[in-house]
Image (cartoon, helix red, strand yellow):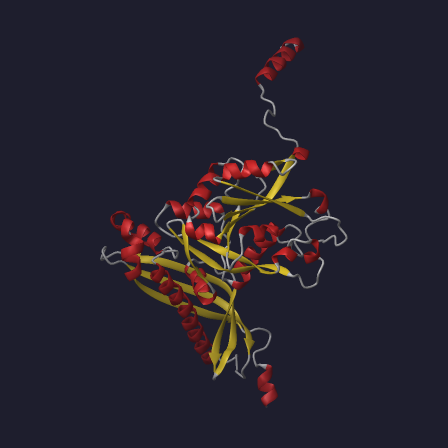
Length: 407
């Protein structure tokens, strides 16, 4: 083929190549890192966006420019009858177009979650091609508005939305009482009756006005702090209650979400004398459908860990004593699990996923009972819980220091 023919062919191909017709220049965009949605007394939505100030976060996430003249983020608030109207009203306050492709946190106010529910909000967000379904979701509780969570400046992490997300991750991995969920998880559970959605709650402690000022991140003891505060339970798209402490930890055991946690047991009359640190866990939930009108659920938990503390003199090298520890640990974990089961049955909200186990065991039977599962079958379902806790290690010391001191 001649060179001239090749050039002509290339020129013809360029006619059919599409350019970046929808491109947007970065200086024309306001990067939204978080979106908060509250409900006003008049029934309208109140939306708050957290916009990144690029020049004030250029130093990196781990550094705080205490001498900075402005904050790393700016928030804008507007109201409207729907999210589209809220976004258009917000745009009248911002010099750049709000861009939601980098939004990594969604905060829903408790008033909105309880009174109206989250179905309309999540439907609108799912339709938006900019908004990602991997965005993390939390609910603002304890008299805290979504606007407060969005507007509070935080230490260590310059961008508040990153602080909330990292707290979700760390508490899920270390404490075992909260769950890191994104909008995709919530949407999938709302679409099926197998399992009710749950969302971690956050609250702001302290002075909300001080939390919005730069001085909040310049103090060694911030006047306002954001913290995880339990888990919200939803039914039919509405928040109906919150679970905390042992109930939420028991829920994490059932859902196979425990990555690491501590279990304390009483020993020789001492409260919380022995601490067991979980390093590995597996939970299997199955359903027995021999009687399709009265299914039975089995929860089998296996855990491995090590002794983290011993506040009483015990000989940890004694294998018979370790067996007693393991039995006591199994009972304590079972108590947590049973407390979560009883709470779920009381609320008639199957956030433990027992309906999914029934569905897997007998799809045909599930089709006939799924419409009445949470209200009729789930509250009465019989659950058998078995826990096998294994002490893998006793730490760097077998004989506690207290034993030597007594001797």
